[in-house]
Length: 346
Image 1 (cartoon, rainbow, N blue to C red):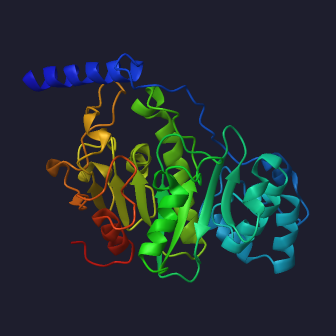
Image 2 (cartoon, one colour; image 1 turned 180 degrees about the vertical axis):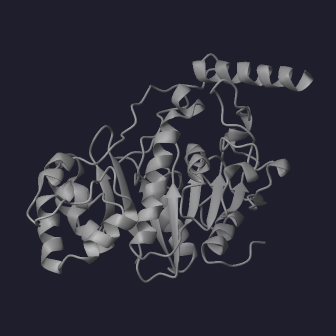
């Protein structure tokens, strides 16, 4: 009974926070981008090869990869040219083909034309809603180590690589991690789901995370199907909720959460994953003030950095604030680099 009362009190506190009465919570409801990519109808109607193309909604990444292996380079290029938005987002399609397809797709939308500049490696792009995107730093096909950065709130195709607060963006985290591993790790900045805006009700509930988890699991499966090494996931803030829900379905050797409000699981065993699970939380991170409850859909459960959750601890004594974990010189970044390259964490 006492534990139940504590849960109710914590839930009431959470409700107060997300309603804004505590003075810091704000945000607006977001509609998650779901379903197959733009252009899917034309893709399904395409009979140029004399056979059906793999359905972007129903075919798994392994099926997609097997289909593309049957095509000549000329046939692949032809499909990419006619259907760039589909090929660029088709998990399991050849990596280099996706880059070229997305270069065409982003150039068609003046809002995102900058993503087509130079040699940027855009492996996923969807302009719907606020826009989702994933960019690769390094060579996915030749790197022995691969990591995927999953961000939290306020990230979309326009903000994922913003210069302000760089270590709070997936692009900044990805480049910092790659540098810390001396270029030995290919890193994906995966802003591939609709994130919450602010710290409102979306951030306190799991709807957007559930939609994001489905996309993340498919994306990691697509990397594996395309011949990429099994990635390590680095999941920041609300992104750790996404990773928690996706854990049992994602292709990942390690799941590292930082500044996490919870993973929608009571402990590591409840994640139902064979991946090693790590957690970092620095002493000055405001996320510590968020109640770790899950009650009537509100909150995200046990703190992954708590001893009883069972995650491996990542040192974060010298990180600062909610977005300082990837800052150069921090013990957390050194630990992340060790995890990314299969080394020892001290």
